[in-house]
Image (cartoon, rainbow, N blue to C red; front, side, top):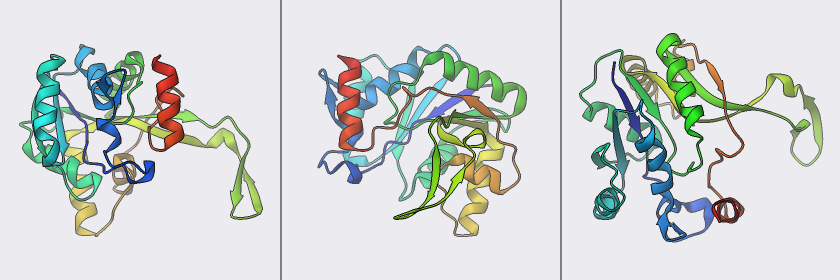
Length: 224
C-alpha cells in the first residue's frame, strides 16, 4: 500500500483581500505552502506528494521544491476550477492501486501536527477512511440576526484536513458528484454522499486554515 498526499494549491486567496494567494505569502522568509509541505516531507508514512496548482506558480513551486529539498514532491500539475476538480486531476495523474491511500490536505493549514497526520493515516489503513476534526467547545447557536436555537455541541465537530480515503473510493465519489453537478466543500462531503463511512480522528486547534487577515496575523505570532 502506497500513501499519496495531494495538496491542492490553486486557491486565489479572495477572502484574505490580498493580491497574492495566501499559500505563497512569505513568513519569516519562507512561503506559507512550504511550512505545509515540510510536514508531509518529514512524515515517514508519506510516499509521494502531488500539487495541483495554478500554472502561473509552477516555476515558483519548482524553485521551492529544490530550495527546501522537498524530494517527495513528484508532480506539480494544473488545478481545476473547483477544489474537487483539482483533486480529481491529481487522482487521474497518479499511478495508484485501488486500495492505496490518498491524503488530501489544504495548502494553507501549515501547522498540522505530525502525530495527528500519522494517527489519521493509521486509522485509514485499518478502517478505510479518516477525517481530522476538532470537537466544538463553545456554545453553538443557529440563526441570522437573532438566535433561533442552540445546538448540542457534544454532537458537533469542526471538520479540518487531512482527509484520507482509498484511491478507488475517492475517485468514485468525485466522478459521481461531477455527474450530478454537485460541488462539495471537501472530500468527506463527497464520500458521505455515496455511502462511504467517514471516520473521525481528533485534530488540533493549531491546524487552522489561514483564510482571513486575522488568521494571517495569528500564524505570524505562532511562528515567531
